Length: 497
Image (cartoon, rainbow, N blue to C red; front, side, top):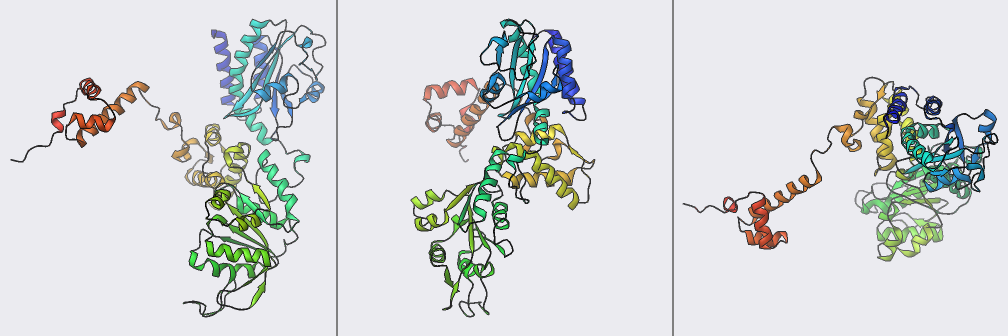
């Protein structure tokens, strides 16, 4: 890459890094690129959370009216296709291309202009595109422009991600938004739509998803949007209770029903009468309790443990599990008839790694929550810390994110959450100062030497036995021992005197 181009990229990086608000620096960066490269009509495009629209969010060289007309669906026009395919496009004479729609109508006076457009993405997520016109551009010039814009797109990606997070949710996507849940990614919008569909019914709901995704919050949202909202919402974690008392917890018991039952006790079904009972981790329900629960679902009645009086159960049941219940049915650990009773209306809650647009919304919420709880002021999260949060795969989902932010709020002392305030599991090699030294081949050689030494120690210097343990021939073993300057004799057991 030519020296002037490197200097330009360095200037772009500096301006974005020094900007208090990287989003506000985008127009300045586009204007700089336009002045220094001879490109015309620079534009940054944003793909919305629902992946339904690609629209121009920053530009240099377009009028306000032209910007308002700039909107495509993924796959529509050149820009929409770049966003959908994730590959750059270069068109020497754009107005003659059947793909090029020119909805801005900005090229009527420049029909010979070439057009270049590259995707903007981060962490495997397509955020939008960066485009520009090249007056009289040929293939070679456009290829160079594409190379430059691709690097610039990488620099602009964090700012574009922030811009996406800051965008209001369109009215058409927010017909139902549970007040107790944070998230506006496409996956969560689907969850909200399903909650809205099932809440007013009496159908049993099965919530599916990994631990920590917020299944209890969704269950509560179903209850609060249902006609039973004024009645109790009772929660039971089937995995947290010993099997010996689980049935008593669910159905209650009579005095003297078992040792320690000194008085009559109502179960969760009675406590939830007229309302909703949420059974979390239903996949851990023991076999004998599965039978009792099936009867409640079928007959809408039950007896307390040790009792003879039949009680009616006017309860809406919502269950949840992180287990594969179909596999449990197949191997006989979960009753098929109970599974089909529970699985009337399944809702899958996506893991956090599949809804990265929600990460910063949740992080900001938890910062506010734990700053108030700890009586501290936290004004912002730094860009490196945001990058770490966005790059992490979150195996513990929302619960893990909450714990990370709580820790960061506690340890910060300057009203700012920085990268080193986050747990070690989120640290990259660069940020933690643990970048591997040496080449891959040297690391493999060190590992091989250690394994040979261990084998020789185990076999007390017997090279033939050590070779068998490592799956090597004696000849190869001899070569490796010589290569690493090892002496098998020093591993032999010493004879007692």
